[in-house]
Length: 169
Image 1 (tube, rainbow, N blue to C red):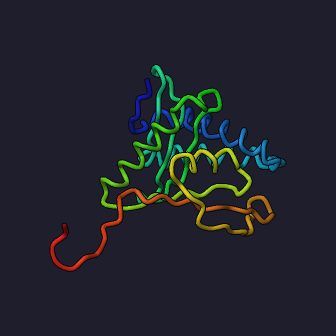
Image 2: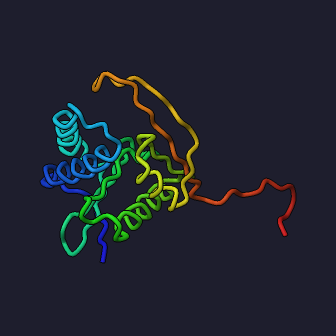
């Protein structure tokens, strides 16, 4: 049974390890890992240490299995990582549902996520959970000295209320 909770400061290293393993799996399938591993590891470690308050975690039988972050506590899910050994067990779906519920609780009506355009596993996961691609971008990344293709996915979390005049029947 999945347990969703807020991250703790003392878990930063473990959160970084989970994020890095999930990133590594995704990047191997894309074929873009050359010379990026060390800087990716540092980025995960720095983020988990600095922004742990923005992270929600999912546990399976007391073990951390993944995490999601909303860096600005807005509708953008900036990070979403499930440890490869726990993928395909419904934990990602449980974590995503909780993050979406938090977004709605804040009065926001939509959720957004961004990923590498060739990360078909992530795109498929989010599409399975009701997200749709709404943009494609190619931007230069100075960290890796190359152009990177990204996609943005979007999901409306609250139903549209039709605008009517007079009483609704």
